[in-house]
Amino acid sequence: MSRYSKGAIILHWLMAVMIIGNLAGGFLHDFVPNDAGQRSLVMGLHKSFGLTIILLTLVRFGWRVANPPPAFPHYFTSGERLLAKLAHWAFYAAMLAIPFSGWVMADRNNRVLSYFGAFDVPKFGVTKSIAEAAGEVHEVLGWAMLALLALHILGLLKHLVLDRDNLLVRMGIGQGRQRP
Ligand code: HEM
Ligand code: HEM
Image 1: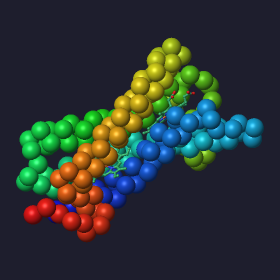
Image 2 (image 1 turned 90 degrees about the vertical axis):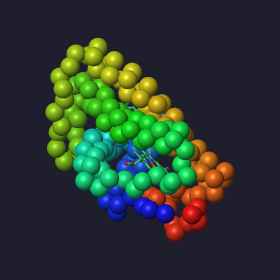
Image 3 (image 1 turned 135 degrees about the horizontal axis):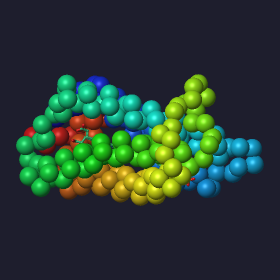
Image 4 (image 1 turned 180 degrees about the vertical axis):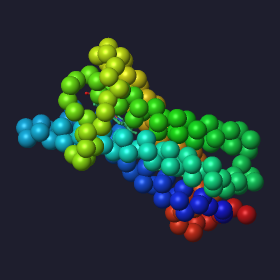
């Protein structure tokens, strides 16, 4: 089975770990104990990784244009091709829109936005009500990303179990069985 390029594979898995970590940090931050400031540590990492994701998405997009993805296996139906394409493009849109909405949300308060403690990142300087609205968008998009991730994994499982083809091979995992 043909594979994505090495760069696409590295970026996919690196970003998957960061995004899943950020979804977990975002949704679970209310449950993080805060007696020694752990919550602001978690959110500091959330914001810094989130800003990194903007940069990596741009790099990944450029890489994708220079290295087009492998063709879908020939036995994919046109419906499967369309659904996979829509889901992948929705992922790319979310990978930019989520961290951007988070960044705009940072104007809710006057705290500095620090990048891993190394330097301060400028804010957009929008009004508090716009920042609050961006927070709503951030939350809704977080749920949308989670739904996309579920769809992504259900799609892979459908291919693995019903069609007996292991698409993980395309993303660099294993030699795997592949349908001729
Ligand atoms: C791909 C990157 C990101 C993902 C997947 C993500 C996801 C999430 C999710 C799911 C939540 C919980 C929403 C809720 O239940 O209210 C959240 C909260 C939050 N995010 Fe992000 N986020 C990302 C990037 C960012 C960035 C770049 C910033 C700021 C620079 C940011 C700032 C925040 C803040 C401050 C909260 C807490 C909101 C509250 O107080 O309830 N996020 N994020
Ligand atoms: C939030 C985390 C994730 C995001 C944002 C994400 C995003 C993407 C995107 C955008 C593509 C299409 C790449 C392109 O054509 O440029 C893709 C492909 C793929 N992803 Fe993910 N992914 C995530 C997590 C996962 C996980 C957890 C798995 C495995 C369990 C996985 C397995 C795959 C595979 C096998 C492909 C290749 C699909 C194909 O055959 O075309 N991804 N992913």
